[in-house]
Image (cartoon, rainbow over all chains, first blue to last red; front, side, top):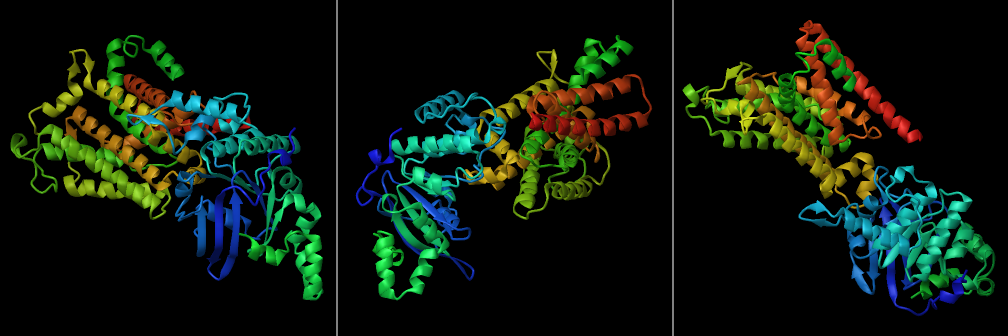
Length: 286
Length: 316
């Protein structure tokens, strides 16, 4: 097992894959995203955490093109993009693994891999070409599934998750977005999925991962974005913080501490507690 | 199907089992089989089309009317000897196009207006029957075209194989290819299985469903045209029975072979079963009530078998 530090890049360097600049999203009178800015660099695995309703899903869906920001800008590789719908994002190499996986149960792995993007010749499917591509992709990602021609509906939850992630990694040349990839899985299956994610990271894939599980967050991610009530309250480098501090940001305990002290004391408390103070972290982030 | 065939074969080996009768069975089932193939596409896509029977009926009335000089609006009445009638290929193309328009209308009502497919097609079927009565006054008309149309049903390729069987083979291969070898077929299967997942993968769910209704309309009217050719006349209700037969065939087929999924080969097996049953009853000149007893009973048994086989596979 290689440690993550071996392959980590310095987050401050590397080329910017995704940049969100002052994203806002309103649903009627409700502000789901409040002035969100952050950057994801090449090869980074960024964890997106926060309590239920914090805005993680809205943010993920905005990056994947399901939602359009009410205000603000998304940049891919430094170029401003308008993601009018998920197809646009996918064509730009931004792939999403949804929580419900979006797999067709009656289809085989290959059919799921290529659904909506079928290889064709003279209007007919090139079945053997797609089969070969899928086999190669699964071998490359070291995903082992017992029967390739089996219907997905007859696979275990972990296998299905692996298929969905492998499909995302196959198409998501630029960025892979993962929504709670381990939420529905047991311990052993979670471990398999985490191993798969490690492999993808070693392969240089950039990912943003939404999770509720702090252990999994720690295992996979280099950087952690914490959301609370639609705002990005912390942008943390994993090696500089402890899990307890992340939890404090999620629950708002850090903010409560600030409120309890004078602003000077708060600054001191925060700079000792975290490398990047919550409020300033937001402003200072590139 | 094997069971039913065997019973009739043992009871009436000379009539039921004769090669002539088998060719007759195949020739007669062809129009209904084509309707059932179209319905199968719709069912694979997770939709119902209750208007197929009425589409088949109106197709017969339209094609006979066009060949006999009624005109597209049906205002002129039959010309003598097909005077003013359209040439056969043009009449057929117009009627098939009308069938696709019916499918487009079904697709629009179901996807854009959000009406449940069962109710929507019940409604459009009734509207189509109304157009049918408006066009042909509900009267049975004999074809006035000098016998060309009847050749479609009575002619034989190389003097051996009846045209209806050739046409059925053509449609079967075409629908099988469409469903199994084209991206549209993949999309229809995906939408039928999990529309939300399909949508997330960038498939136009509404477009795919509409296409399956259009294909169903195309097959429905094609079957109606062939039925009118074999009857040599247009009857306002001629194709109505195909609705129930097509459903029974498709559901029976889904119970055979594969996990309760609808598929082309299964539907063909279902069609054979239904046809063999009706043919056997006819050979024994069973009283009319038995026809309906068989048809209704078979539909229920077919759907039950289909549901059970799906349940059984999902529990595996």
